Image (cartoon, rainbow, N blue to C red; front, top):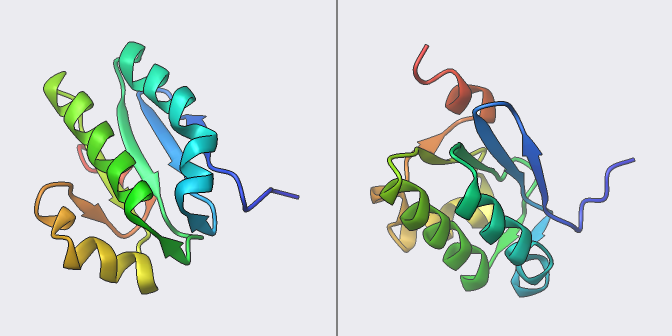
Length: 115
């Protein structure tokens, strides 16, 4: 059984997938921030946030998405947000993050974007 309270970083070859928990808040972000910061600092990979199972996001979650986007786009890497629905989709749209970070219906859509 998968723990839905913790974010996970999954290596998919050329892409890191951040499987976001049901609540991507300050507690969840603090649990993954250092690992994700290290990963985006050393990995030459694209990154997608998977929000397909996420029901709530706060400013901490948004901040981590923006941080990763800035770090990786400076390296010429792609960053996307996938699987948004409900409150997280509303927050991302209201904060206009979707104007900068591309949205995808699913992680598979992100992974196949170039093919």
